[in-house]
Length: 119
Image (cartoon, rainbow, N blue to C red):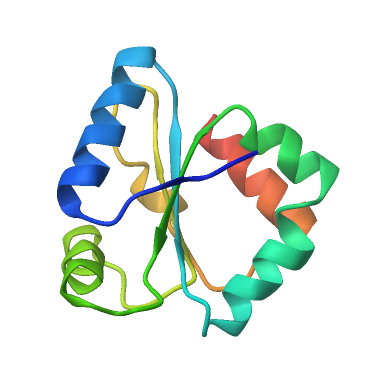
């Protein structure tokens, strides 16, 4: 279940357009090496079988904002998140599902249910 990396707004726009063309929903994960909750999500939530099964139905994007450089800051501002961890979802038509934005940690059961709402 590999994540495709995005670094810039242009990267994100390109990947969202490609997913829309394929009629697939998208999840964008904002991650940083210094983010304790990001590491916890990677260790405890993402490997869970129910989470993995749900995530397989999504185009998975990840913005690694560890460096917090200008491109990272611009992407965060563009999407409107203060800091990682954050998960943003788009439906198969390319529209953001705003009410499904997730900031902070979610355990496997709650996260699997959250993803189901995006499908």
